[in-house]
Image 1 (cartoon, rainbow, N blue to C red):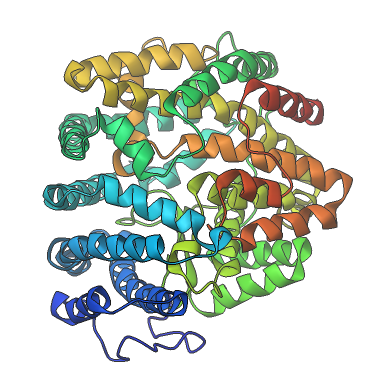
Image 2 (cartoon, rainbow, N blue to C red):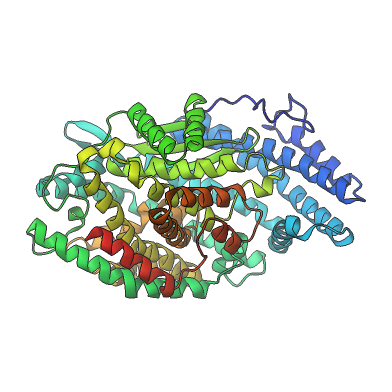
Length: 567
């Protein structure tokens, strides 16, 4: 875990140095003072916003430290209780005050002549949040967080006995790269069947979540949770219909490309059909890429890559390592997946993942490193609201770093770099259909709430037939029917997935730029990161040297460019 002491470079000026935000009694006087403070000039408003940002940073960091501690060891009862105490007994009290302060800002903005370029994004966000806020939703949002914690606990407890030892599902997944098809099939079934043991519990948990989220949406005056989520995620620049059109474009462009890759794979493997356990193995029978053995090797190697991409970025990663801001390895009791978050007061990134020694672990740390550089690039921004970016561009930061790192990945793969690069691009092509599955599933669920869990699973199966026709799932219908449960985004951050597809198109544009002028592409990338969330989404893309567009017009030439590299 990262050092919890306040960052010396960002000392508290408004909040008392010894203020402990683990209790609401400490926080409330600050919210009250801000709500009562007189604001008559632009200068007074800016000072008020800076003080509010400091308060929010201290408050947010308290919750985030407890959350990261809990995810690092979900089977630690004390960590669980500390996190639950915060989300149940501290955080909810702040929500009405947030609404009061937003309204205070909007009232001040209406009477003051604010610089439009500086404040237009912030004001738009504040007005949107005011429109969505309902006090009756506070306890429902708390319950939603608790259900997400339950999902993490269930998944983190999943282990299997294999090869003479107890292994997490992440550790078990390594065997899917083994040349021995019997081993792959055995371990795939073992992992999937372990999920089936908790399938009913996960079904009921999801039903609870969907019903809860639907009620939250209705309370906020929305037709359904899809409408609520699009507003809450501030998707001002595209609509649900645009997402559905994106799915169709993927079906037209990426599914045929995936089928072509699948046919090549089938021929090389010498199999009649491709089964789920045939998709990660090297089709030419070469042993799995095992680019590192220890967490230290992973961190050291990625550090060298970051230094080669841009020396300043390498120095930032060195700082994160020195400050203990990395938790990389998989272990029993650790929450699934990977993420980068920021400790808001110290303005310090933290990277969490479940490395087990695979090629994809290298990509994951490069990816999360991109997020961390984004966080770091915005450290000097005085307004906390601008230290983060819209998710669609936040993922450009991470996915572009995977692409910019490609010329330097021989650090891990040596003579196998060409093979690893081909696998990287193959995964991009096959990712788009899977992303469409995950996104389309949620569009259906939240606009067909009354259909029920069995109808939702029917729809998931229809999506897998639509977007993964290359897979032979005969005899695996039950496993396939429940396979959506493995995607934590569906449970924990509904509708957060199409961003990966949108961002991947931005990242591929930056990759193409880098092939023409690497230094300029890196400079544009960093320029986009430095803006944080201070400009609208299309302008952030433009600043990074790409365009915000996810129609077939942009998708097709990029997939064709990737296809040329793969060949």
